[in-house]
Length: 229
Image 1: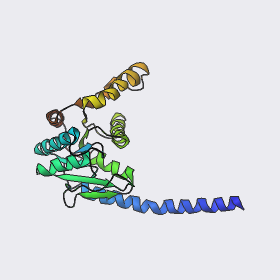
Image 2: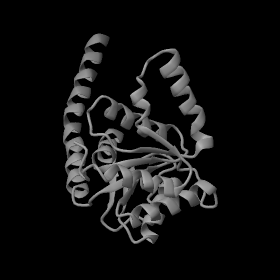
Image 3: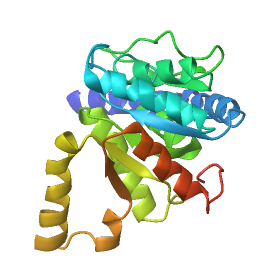
């Protein structure tokens, strides 16, 4: 009897999974339609917990303004902290300001600096991540937590495995990122040889907004501005 109940419950799960495909497909269709008309953008990632008076917030805001002045739009996760700073800087600079929001039980709410019609809401992290990767001409990664690291390493992996075209990945904040970069070089590469030396070439480590824009401009002097796959 118990086995029959478990079997029935398993069938119900499979049915629910099948219907979920339509919701997933809807998120992809809506995202592709809206993002394809926005134009070349740079994604800015970082902690949702960073306060407006923190130096990283101020730097992210200035950096986003410089990015839009250079001709790119800005995409963020749409929430508070570094995301808000990125959208605010883009807004103040008169450029495109996009927010890809995710429904979370904490921390996440729309910030007020996203352009009207350019705020997209997602239930699925993996759909949202596809939008970041497909429509970003570069990743600018400020200090953050697990979500920031997730986006960083997914982009590195996709480029490393040639699933997407190469684009600049820029870590901002030497003090924050140096320990991770040392571990990648000394442990992943030198000690265990789990990556190749050229994989590290994907990553730039900087401290200023001018360095970020210089890297983007130098890369796109010889590359096309287009979706990544």
